[in-house]
Image 1 (cartoon, rainbow, N blue to C red):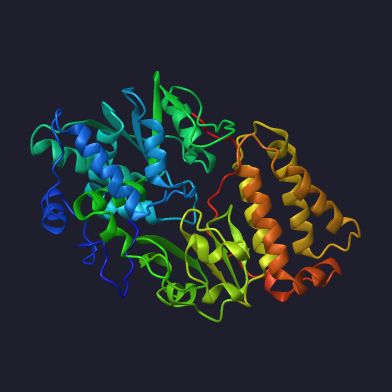
Image 2: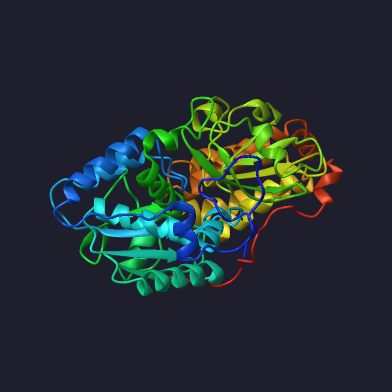
Amino acid sequence: MTDVAASSMAPRLLAGTATGQRLDFSQHVAVHGPLALPNRKGTPQFREQILNEIDASGLTGRGGGGFPTGTKLRAYIQGHRRHAMVINVMEGEPAAQKDSVLACYAPHLILDGAEILATIVHAPSITVAVARDNPAAFESLSAAIAERQARGKRPFDIKVVAPPSRYVASEESALSHWLDGGMSLPTFRESKPARLPVRGRGAIVDNAETSAAVALIARHGGTWFASGGINGAAGTTLITIAGAVADPGVFEVPLGTPVRDVLALAKPIAAPTALLLGGYGGTFVGPEALDRPYSRDGLVDIGGNLGAGVIIVFNSSNCIVAEAARIARWMANESAGQCGPCVFGLPAMAAELGKLAAGSKDPALERSLTNHFEVINGRGACAHPDGVVRMARTALAVAGDDVASHLQGRPCAASRNDTILNLPYNEGEIEWK
């Protein structure tokens, strides 16, 4: 079970978890209060009231897409079609742990939000998806469902399922495809939100943190939720901080907090020279990010993105070129293998980054890498190859002079250091079913 990290603010999503103990149903109600769901007659009024509060809250999806939650829900509830409600706790990004922390310590907050969302979208039942390699989260959520059932009849049948533990299997189209009896492979969607079929119904997939936030909004209102943010941002959020820090973990912070103050919670070992924001498909940024607000608007002009709520810290003991090569190789092995950019482009790009990290003096290497970036980007069946290109391209931009040294056959001494990244073994046969 992942540790809950300490923070200087009064937690909202992680309220009551400071002792490091999982909140059972009674403890959850003692911390957050009961949740009243409407009867059938009161559902239309409840639905509109909650949607208005979600709009007022400024809540955006916490799974990486960042789409406004209220807008997404309203797009689905036209007419009286009954949808499939899916809560995504897959967290395929190995650098991320925030959804696992919520599932392990505050599972009832996720389930409360799931019941509210299911009420809004006319869902007859709820499916909670937890990656197959995360038994702690699976068991915690399963126990929470049993605790709720022991209290009496619940309005929804809730089940926990365990899809394959792959990076792209957590993407919502891959998840809905697996729930529909297929392989956990992503599919091309020209626009979002798009209809995702599950057993003849349109599936609505929301992230675990998003669901937990909805549970708070239903209790306290949208204005209260928004007040948790600063510098023009709305609400609090969970962040996984990893890499060159003394106290890695999951922290709850007000959105809009300066990045420097966010990192201070995890105690950087030395002055950061670069950060990887959003996870392995995210963006490398330099020290200029430290004084920016941690929010979409605060980071957008330097190319930053919140992504899956991850910050990986690097310092002068780390070679950004070598770490980018390791990530690219890992991500190439995680592809679904459905299109040319993933089957051919990512392995070739990863191999070239590996040569660069080793100090190859191939005069064509820099141009070849640039060509791969241009050919791969925007041409995949899903966004996976785009994320790898973004990570690699921004890594080389941030590394600057080190890249020039590597190209001249003089790799930096840090390139021989061990990785600070969590890169689970992923060689060999891939399980998609």
